Image (cartoon, rainbow, N blue to C red; front, side, top):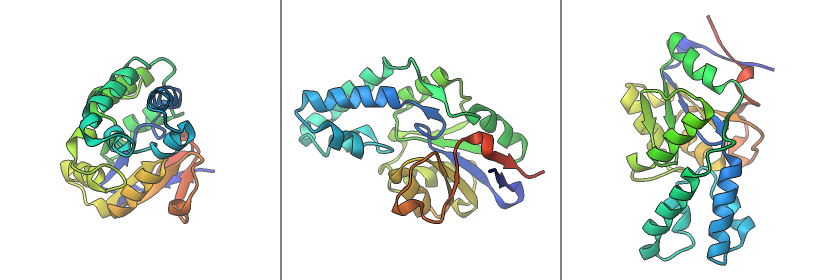
Length: 209
């Protein structure tokens, strides 16, 4: 089954990164499992709450405010050392190259900090577009729409004429709140995905001539 994008209907395509453009699940599970163990937290609960959310926002749920910045930096440094095995979601690199040629500008909107985002994109062999909105660029992370609204602003795009590719609850809610069309990548299903289009990976995506 394929999904077709019509350039005449779109100002831009906005992509989440982890789980949407690349698979970093092994690194995420390893780093957050260790975080949970170090702080005596329930690992399953932690892993169930972090996907698509900025690290600092997640850590703030579990630790006192005065410890959040240091623990966030510690976790990010750990994740920077866990780049082996990070791979693209099939077809992702090709789509990021092809869409601009079809007249659809692209941006990445990620909850990761910039250094980690660039490192993971490089590890997966995914081209870095001119516009990359990261954790440091917005006051509010996903599920707030700020990141997607900022990406649209930088591209000179109307958010209502943008398509957002997402794989997680927080990001899907952010894309919907931005007023954009949202396409789910992968198998995640929840209340927020009802009625949304879905692709397993980018081999199912087509661009109308």
